[in-house]
Image (cartoon, helix red, strand yellow):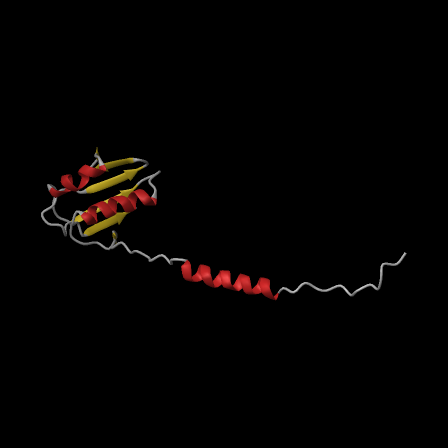
Length: 124
């Protein structure tokens, strides 16, 4: 039994699909927001230099924060450091111990720079 002449099979045209993909690519490139890098001013200890005044050591270990060995709340840190410094340019030593994550360190640094302290030193 014959149903007529057999037609040649047409190949699918991919041009409209490629156009849509390129339009989506351009849309997402223009709509995306590229993040801006933020730099934290930080000096690394080891180059020597003068240190004067009472100790100002901030220890981060896990989820605890200590100032000169005494546990302290993050909100009270800037106030406690005010009594230990003569000026905002005095060195404050930061030490991240075991279990401290980078976000906690950056949060403490943000809190201190927001309070006006300009010389933060990171030690290992």
